Length: 173
Image (cartoon, rainbow, N blue to C red; front, side, top):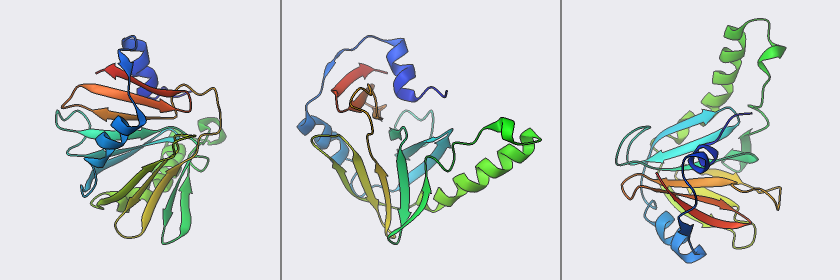
């Protein structure tokens, strides 16, 4: 199993405090109008970056654990299940990597797209991000017991918010 950023964040530090739904929406609203600077498909999770790339001190990102889907022009293009491949099913590691990167490339057009809307459902905490070019990323929580369905990371403010139906937990980065 791949450890998400949320899980690794949880392993490093104990919870600092909770964030309200309104505070989370306020943080996410700061991303509206910003272009996606980098995207990464990591195992079957997806990370959307603004204000820089991995490791940049200015970056803010949304790390979405499965299940999620990516849509373009009203059609599903890629989902977390599509990239949930088992390397053992391939004869060579190179074949596995080629297939994985090919599928992950379906989201390459997200880089440079501007975030137009970001909605978080108040009950399930599903996140829907709408981008220019009629692109949409949706998560949908499928467990009431999940501790972190997705994570918002704000490196300038040095915190991450782990989000799930159980609430929003803020931790230091």
